Length: 471
Image 1: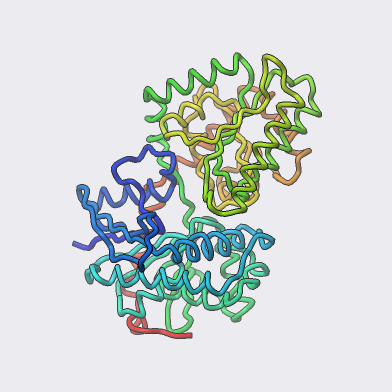
Image 2: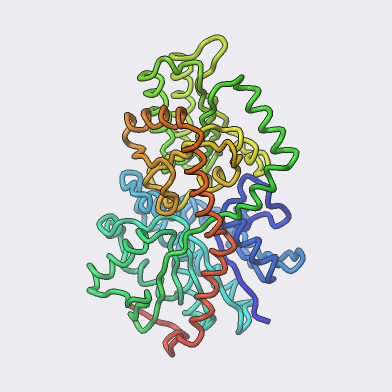
């Protein structure tokens, strides 16, 4: 029976789906593998003094996990370097933070070759391979170079950058061409797909056909959008758990009848946390009568703490939270509660439900599942209001949220006041429309749609699919 082989930078804890780190990728891949059986390969998270290790395997039920230890140099130059100091900032339109080092790129290609050799050691002829995210863009090409002729799909969880920014990447053509090692490439949104196609139209005078197929470099590639989602019923069920009930009670009691504004974000410059804090401060300036009646609970989950830019951001947020509380706070009211610990998904379900307003205001985001989780966790008879950045991928689907420009603190301040005052009938109307959207496009549907299209390409693979192909 054909197996599904999932490949990602890291492998999630397959023993638990409740960890705060269980994001869309972990939940989707874990669910797919538990249903169908297969292999999940990724970095173990360990840095070793010698070279990269061969995979070591662990089997839990129908899922086999293959973990690779990476050398300290590769962790520094592949993961902290090319992945998170080159591609991540560039793809999030932060060219001012993008570092271009040849050693970073060399390590990036080396690790992708390591992954490719590991997969070749156990792949079977009918296996379907699904590669995840920006860390592993060249993996399809490396697998083809080793003679792997299986169907291989790739999904990009982060945004694809505008063509004008993407071409600032040294050797950008090689990165794009490496995607033709895949049979199917998926993006979060239609905007991302268009940005990808713009590159080919501008640089190569090529366009996909009406079905999304492109024939270039002796390869055929299908490119489509597949917006990732959540399973709403699971979030509802989590909301009934003891942990959720406890967190709901504690948040409500701690705010003593005040309106609760909520933010749940990784501490990452793409999430726009300084801008959110500035908008909240402006809200308190412009609406002094609101002081003491509303509080912002911001959960900031630590991320990439070894990267200097993230350390600086963490320090900035602590200082800004202190400044806001020092300026506006009272003996019986703390305007901004900034928590940097992680919460399990069951606890988050209760926190979502307790909130009157959720501010999801990234400067640029592939999708942002917090927005969808917040909607799913609401009380249908008394739902909260979602304020959503128009630069989040979720804004393409969740049009009934209040959409804002996170760079415009005046608009955001006004929107906070609007959300707090929104009448119940309007809140219910907006929530019903949002909930219907996420119910139609669930996490299971995302996985099924991608795998259906990938498997349907079996008969369209051409003779050039095997062996080495060059540009």
